[in-house]
Length: 324
Ligand code: PEP
Ligand code: MG
Image (spheres, rainbow, N blue to C red):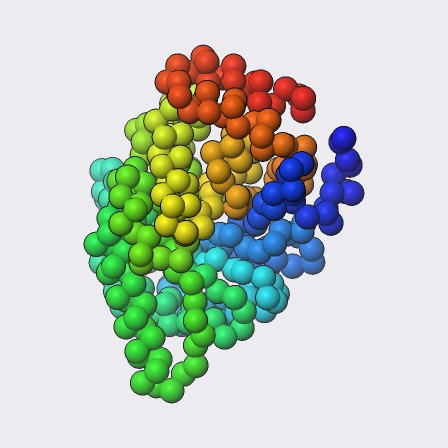
């Protein structure tokens, strides 16, 4: 049964067999959460905090950052808010950052690498996040990790920020910590990350780019940017299964999570948490509401067994047939 998008806005996201699915929103700036713009999302699954750092000549101060994070946490009340630490470099280069000369910026000093290379800058953000944590349910997410070592260093910086605040008598609350899985190496070693994190979030935009060696912003190769390439599916599946085995929740926060044509595939792969641009929430929810997990399981199993792209395309078609 098909329902109007406006009617499903308030309903909870349950599959036909009654499995609850979490649909979360991706945001870029604090006022993205204003006035019902999140269309019934159960939380913020990805706040791309680097947008606070772009389009200006100086770094935002600790207080400025604190105000931005507090605003989102306060607006979301008791709903979880996942704030990703600044993911700069590559395609997001602020004027104050002088790393523009790299020949391969997407393979250069980006994301967590930049933060670990500039620990003082990183700690300003971590202090601001911890200070804001008393205003809601904060989860901190580290981007572009490629190894256990980087994750441990990131957590050490967070611990250092906690110690500083404690010494200064400044309050902070418990926060959950997560790792982004968006580089193939991180997906392959996901198991060793589990004991250091409360959750994993798969960034499929970069995972596809780095797995297929396709620049995500280059039109000349955009026809080769394939979310259902079997190699991509294997890495996503491995991450979901590894999280499930270790009892660590896994979400997808890349564009795949917001593509209703891929909702059933991801459900069939075991995904239960999807974070996406708010504009996609209702369409994805509609797909969840019309999916019976038992019905998709055998088709998805066949998709995951084959490495033939034509066969994968046929099976994807089959998976979505009743909604086309
Ligand atoms: C991703 O890579 O999938 C992701 C969510 O991060 P961004 O798109 O901001 O790189
Ligand atoms: Mg990314």
